[in-house]
Length: 301
Ligand SMILES: C[C@](O)(C(=O)O)[C@H](CC(=O)O)C(=O)O
Ligand SMILES: [Mg+2]
Picture 1 (cartoon, helix red, strand yellow):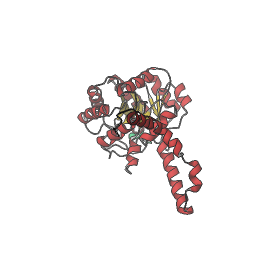
Picture 2 (picture 1 turned 120 degrees about the horizontal axis):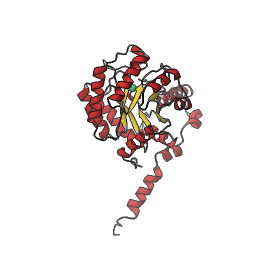
Picture 3 (picture 1 turned 180 degrees about the horizontal axis):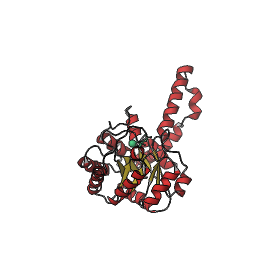
Picture 4 (picture 1 turned 90 degrees about the horizontal axis):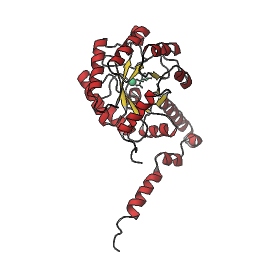
């Protein structure tokens, strides 16, 4: 109903438990709270809040234009409606190390289970674009240590992302992954690895859990979950998949309505009213009303 029954702490502990077990946690990107409900209903282990999706939702490019308030507000709206843990893309932490510390605390207050902080310079670029620049390792480590030290709930998951693969190569990725793990990262996100061999190399070199980004139209081969599981990867995100498919349907619908003057031919492809109401738990609200209004105070006639 109004929000999840699980507390943020319980969701964080569930995410941590999942990271410590063998197996793969699958986190599709939710473009809305309703999409998060569908992700939960479909049996996934978590929800991802993508910076690229949040930017696109605002009709902005993924180049660091969103604010912490926008990200925290959307992340809270998404996290509160699902029993699943929510992992948030916190870009570079929204500024200097002190800003990163504030970002962690604002996101903790928003009820999310964890976030990732990347080592790009500000303003960042999408990790699958060329022309990225990463901060020198000492600066990246200051940013990460600020995040780890700012955490008030020890179960809040801090994921360190490195974008260095496309600027300095795989060895530099492994060097940074090790340094980030030593600095207290709970999870490492090596961005834009090419394929299975590179995931295998990072897996061999680093002890802490690893996240794989299976985003379309980028630099990474789209590896099936079974392959990622066999490689010992712990988390996989599908950050923009649902938005890309939704926008594909939007484009087609607008074309049909413009051409045919009606959406009648599309109705069979739609989520029905009943399916939407079921996803929104209308019956829970009806039960709430019945409980409050029919078993409560009876006005005198
Ligand atoms: C994971 C990512 O940071 C995101 O914002 O979802 C993007 C995804 C994308 O642009 O495809 C990324 O930089 O990989
Ligand atoms: Mg992003």
